[in-house]
Amino acid sequence: MSGVRDESVTEVAEELRRHLAWLADAGVRELAPASVAAAASGVSHDPGAVPAASPTQVPPPAPSWAEMPPARTAPRQAAGGPYALTDTGCGSAALLAVREDLGECSRCKLGSGRTHVVFGVGNPAAELLFVGEGPGEDEDLKGEPFVGRAGQLLTKMIEAMGFRRGDVYIANVVKCRPPGNRNPEPDEIEACEPFLRAQIAGIRPKVIVALGKFAAQTLLRDPSAISRLRGRWFEYGGVRLMPTFHPAYLLRSPGEKAKAWEDLQLVMKELGKSPQKGR
Ligand code: SF4
Image (cartoon, rainbow, N blue to C red; front, side, top):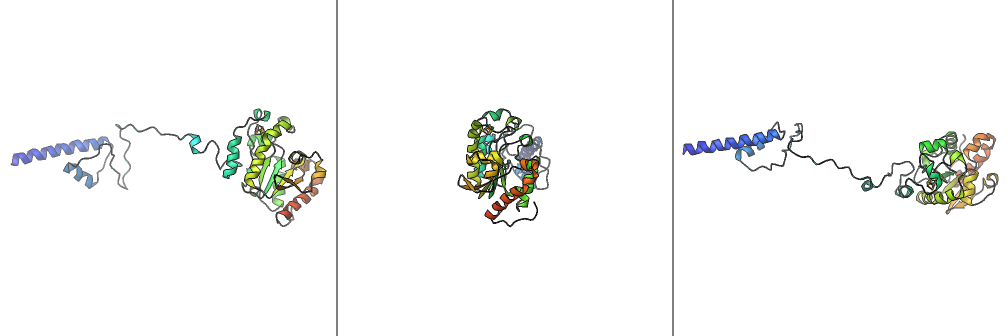
């Protein structure tokens, strides 16, 4: 009887030794008492499960015998495509959809010479939208509208109206830089303007300010001089539109700033903004 018990103890000890060797191979350096008891009692153990580490225990290294599945990178499309709400000029589902539709556009010949599509920038729910003609060199390089000297003046104009630049939205009639800063051509406008319209539909501003002769003439389909268009209310896509001088023109002709300020004051009145002293 004693011999049978000794034999049984020897078998259990051998089983325990094999189990501990397996755990050591799996990288386990410390055992909770329950695990020892389970091993010692011969309770069956899932060989594929690495024992859980105690809170104070450093997680064991991956077992050498296990084939870890390769890390899988979700395809970009599954994450919502190559564009994101955080991209410049997006920020709302509506604008993101327009950006995704635009993509790395080559719908007109301007697409071949650009560095970046200059989609737009600012508050996706802005009550005030500024529209210029098209990106210049600085904008093309940075991918953001109105970032050069004219852009700095535009920022001052926006601040004088009582807004921060980030409160408004800024876009252009065409989103790629025309070579040599020439005016966009009719086929280029025809290809690109639907995206501006879609942006306006997504932003739903109360007022659009058309910056300069080209933007005003294009949006209004009116060849009149900017000096005749400025300071008067029009409509574009159901939104009130005020033409004024382009900041680049104001840099060349600072004497015209007072007229531009008059135009912006009309916009402020329309938006219920108090006149600011500085400009
Ligand atoms: S200007 Fe507009 S339509 Fe032409 S390639 Fe650029 S994004 Fe496309």
